[in-house]
Structure formats: structure tokens, C-alpha cells
Image (cartoon, rainbow over all chains, first blue to last red):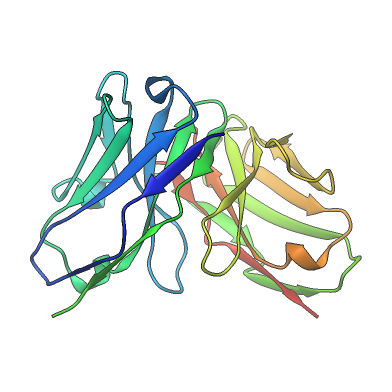
Length: 118
Length: 107
């Protein structure tokens, strides 16, 4: 069965960086994109960007473009999202999701809480 | 960017009710419209893709319709497990964007 397993809770100070991992199983990793979506406490869903594990192509939300990097390791079927220069408003739960151009995000990870606090 | 507007922001309904949620895009999105259900503390659950296609395992009481810029999600007979927040998302063009959500609460 398709599963996306994310890394654990993170607590970071302002200005630091965080890297969240998302290990995929149950399907051919390179056949689907991986999207990253975040949700601040009590708020809605925000699309952060997308990466193709097959090509390495990415597409980032403009507001995060200067601070975010998405990568994949096809040898371990793992996607990574790194966010730099963290601010308090980056406090959120971060989700990865398997994505295709036809069905959108059809499987999601369990979420990773990232708290940014001094 | 394509703006997605959901209405109403919240609604109160009873078990057994028929409920209709609306999502409007700021431009034509060629039916690349998905719906998600989210419960507190949980990841979003995919319900519908391509405006009207049920994701695998989704109960048939959920249905989606619409085209162009206007879309609806209908729950034909509301069940207790359906009380949640629902989000639409356009995936026609980058950046992908979500609506603000509709919270379905118990009356």
C-alpha cells in the first residue's frame, strides 16, 4: 500500500534552517511528483511547491522561492524539503503528498510539526 | 495566481441533511479541481479529483460537479464522520492554490 512517512517534530530558533524528510513506499517513486503543503495553527492549507523525482524539476511558491529547496533521493525513495532563515510565521505542520497531474495529491504523509521560537 | 474562494466559510447541519459546498476560481481551470476533507490534527484526505471523480475508497454520498470557474461538493446524506473542514484546490496551473475552507459543524 502507498505510504508516505515523514520525519519527526522540530523546534528551531529564528534564523535557523529545517529539513523535513518524506519516505515513500508502495509505489514507483519516480512515477509521481511530490508536493509540499503547510498549515499554520488554526489556518488553511498553503501549497509550498513540487518536485519531480524523475527529472529533479521543481516549482516553488513565489513567496518561499528564496528560502526553500526541495530535493529527492531516488535510491531511498525519499523527498526532502529544506526551509532556511526561519521566522515565527513558519511555525506550521508540513505535509508531503504524492501528486500527479491528473489526480492531484492522492496520498499524504502524516505531517511534521515545525515550531520556530526563540 | 488563481484565487480560490469557498463559500460559506462555515455551516451547521444535522445528520441526514444534504449539504452543498461551493468553490469559485478566479479564472477557468479546465476542471483541474480537487476536494479534500480534513479533521483536526489529521492530514487532509483526498475526496475528489478532476472536479467530479471520486478518489478510491471515498463513499458514494460524496459527489462533485461544476466546470469552468464554479464547482460544488455535495454530501447527499450527512453522516457523523463527515463533520470536518473541506478544501478545494486548483491544479490547473502553478502555483497550485487552495480555497480558504468550509467548516461543516453539527447543528
